Length: 634
Image (cartoon, one colour):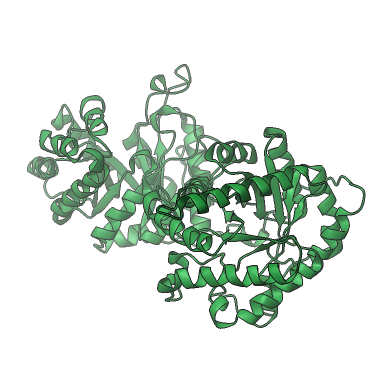
């Protein structure tokens, strides 16, 4: 909120605008009709999409004015300022970070000029798009920093007198809530919170429409809606779900003109203006009180929507779920050659592996967002656990396949022996190889009695060393367990587990030697908080068996809080957190997560000379903290 002598006047004006806007939405016979795409129109006038479209408010104001006027002439009752990307993060990409205030001020002034000269009741909405960066835990930006950036843009728009704010094309619910909070911090103007959805009718992080509308209602949005996404059919489908979940909520709908196709360097959208005219009535029937267009729409689309609203309502049923599959993405079989992971380890490179858990349900959105962040940050390989803690999760083969196809980063498939007989083990190995998975981490697996299904079958035909032998001396030579040819040999690179703090170290050394003799290629350890434990174990192993023969990736699990440290120390077998580290976490208080990052970096640096890489295990999916560690060690 504003402070000082202008507080009462500005605050009172905000409240009056809010009441006026909401009353107009509720009482008008038809929805308020907003404008359409700005970027599409600018591109049609020769402006390239890689230019800063928001900066045209300063450099080419006549273009922006011309487009605003065209939309008002078409019947638009609401203009959105040309400020979709005018936040500090996005402007900095064009070296315009110091122009945030000027660009947003100019955006409001241009829209307001057209609204006033029209002599109509045309509203001016401050348009705020996504920051263009991911928020933690799936990105590097903390919510506090995101709120400061949103606040800066919102305050600049408010200073020039917008009537409301439209927060649009945001795909992360958390980012939207931060944006709403930034507006509430500045003023009491109405807030339209408009999310975008993927082809499966969920947000990028997997939230369904019913959850979105409930969360945004609780977060303080005055109008909740959908924009961008696919064409009108998908928007209508999502709109109906939202209305069913919260019939009392004011809704908005601003679709793209269908899914775009790139033709001759430009994006072409298939949905015609007449098609939009029909859907304007369907949106109204489905409960939308604010409608308009997004990417690909033009003044012709808005004109048809205006005409459509003057006709009797019709109901349109979408023909499909909007879910399609691209045959070009089908996984092609790869030649049998050593994996990149194996080549890096055998050549002596220092390797960073990060563990991820498969999702508990069908949605992979959050997992894929995390994998994308890790790939961008420089992880060499991603480890996919198999039913950790014996809890039901998606098959790790599917997750490995999805990540490898999408992000061009290799995975390591965790392969427990527990719960699999010989038939299942061998069939699963063939399936993994067919899906281009080459790196296998063999473990015993967690007992089912501790998980979701304690009565589930817990038997196994092979111990880890036996499975390693089957892979290395059977499958990789072209034979199954019975000695029958399987055709083409597999080319698996096989890892084994190591506990550096076992109750019986001599037994752990014996088990490790058995795995080595069976053909293991590398070692992943349990989390280590005492570097001396690693040195001590290797020394004792070498006293009995000679030089340690395998590359070692030492486990590092960044601590999040004092309670997390105590839990690991007291309740997880094989993990010991020294008292000094636990005390550091206590003394860090509110900054304990950052202290956990510092401790992890210190441990990695101390153990680096004795290891071939690290095996990072993000606690509670805090991939943002993992990236901080990667930034400091890569």
